Length: 539
Image (cartoon, rainbow, N blue to C red):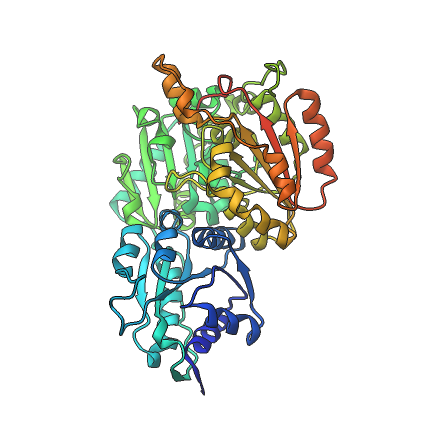
């Protein structure tokens, strides 16, 4: 126990929680804490160009690395600037701590004063107050504890006038209970096993809440002779399994969609079954639904299952498998009928281009072949995104970051930077639309350059807000209000210190792929697309 200042105590307490990387933007309420984290404790500080970017970087860093993400910003407008990002993190159930400065307690009329607790509450994040200088260690520890247990961002609110007060630093690191949740038992389990045992065409569906249970789910699927599928967030979980039909729902291939419709029992692990997964319930009609999730609020939100088990995915899969063996239940034989290559083949794109444009689906097919195989895949939001999700693979769910928990655009490049720092030995591939890149990506591309990241950015540039463009077209209205004459993104990338290439034909695509292979730092490929020839969103 040593005497120190509050800002030093916060920095030290953060380091004591195993944090070596902090994202942020400095202001007068957090700059001294950042300085102490770097100079006194050897931490790495990643300065963002915007407060929201810092939160998004920490979010993706946590997702890819498996650690608690940490970011810091100052007070007032800094916090309101981060609201979209904070909501994205809260809805993504990402454990992270946001160290937020606050205006001095003794100056309620400060220009940048705002009720920060109420702002944070609106985002869905948790709020923890630095109560006094004397409780600094306990309050930091509480924020880290809650982030891990509640699996959401926790904002630690730090009044600026505390920072230079002297305190006695006392190390406080709380044990976090991380053992799996409950084990399924009782009549509901019996009913669920009965449904599964009697199914002739069962299918196992895994979501983000079941990523840890891959081996147990595969064992159950093999025993049942049932195909495997995932939600978008669990993309890549069953890669290389012979009966993996990939993403379930509106993102399925037409053949896989028909197969799902023919199944008679869907065993759902770790998924809340939202409308995109179930196609607004259409795919769940006339079949038994068994839903298993450790989070009670995940059950019954999209539809009411026939059997609901609030339990750990892996332990429940093992329990079901044990009882099937004990009762000597015969396998369904469902997988014996399947032609998996046909089930997972999306329609092939044409190489025919409108003059001055490249065919988007063909370009994605070539990029799937040419992009680094050990990539971390990040996608921004926009009309372009569903084809990326379907046609560009990721090694596993931890290597896939979809920035759409809040339905926002313009979050992709910031999360790509966080992902790159979370997996520094691997290349990051980020897909964005033109509107999303202008909204958020252009702010941080130079950050990626400064950090020397191995980052490949693919811009789907249809010179429009595509989702709105198609709505005007469908109603036979003039879409010109959605169209933009953007600058050359390739030239922007070059001006920001990276490499950039424009692609407006099949031939230029091949040249761009060669340039991408020889890249020396952040690389941007701009796909020039005909706004009237971009596939519709599959949602």
